[in-house]
Length: 305
Image (cartoon, rainbow, N blue to C red; front, side):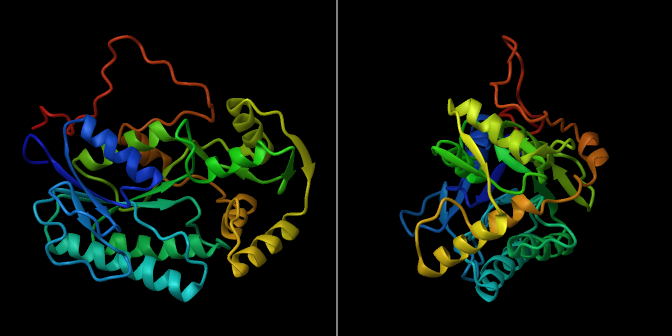
């Protein structure tokens, strides 16, 4: 990576993962350009970008690295989700290749696996193919948890705080990743000299049962839920009806499918370890930090070469 201050563009920078990355890269001395849907003030640190529209030719001008986190999760219709998320990703990654960026990182999901039942997973899988066609690195994130309480973990936190928590898919399991490990993994991939052209599973390889996941979240939230077994198909049907009616829901029907029918394994863990990425097992306790520990990521600090 050239220059003392790499310039990193982040799509979806106002979302859960994007905002974590933005803060981390800025802390490491990088110059960050937030690509956001809002049409507010455009500046050197903020540029308008909407996946539903062709990106302007100068969107990535002066950028060294692109981290593509942007994704419209509100779309439940297949054609709409495909035309915005998949086609939008294809256009952005094609622009990144033509702009000559040093590294492009596409944030995918462990929901993207052969045989996935989720529309979300299928669209992520299609976008992965576009990423590889354009020389991008692909990171499949597990269920992200941490004190930020974003994404699915935040929705599950709200669920365990209810007087009664439905226990669906009791035999299902999840591969999890702490939010701090996510930002470190992305930073290391962004700075690596070379990245293999395979999906990199950013999740601990030991699965966590759905009940253990809920119990861990409840403990961190200070909640004492009463678990009641509940057929996931009934809850899924209720969520789908709520989506059609436009009702506010705790999470999407698609997300429930991901909880019940998860990926069978974490892909390419050896390649992940070879990049110096180490992922902790599921634990919501704050990680210990030795006094004076150096937590910088090589290649992304203010003194990087």
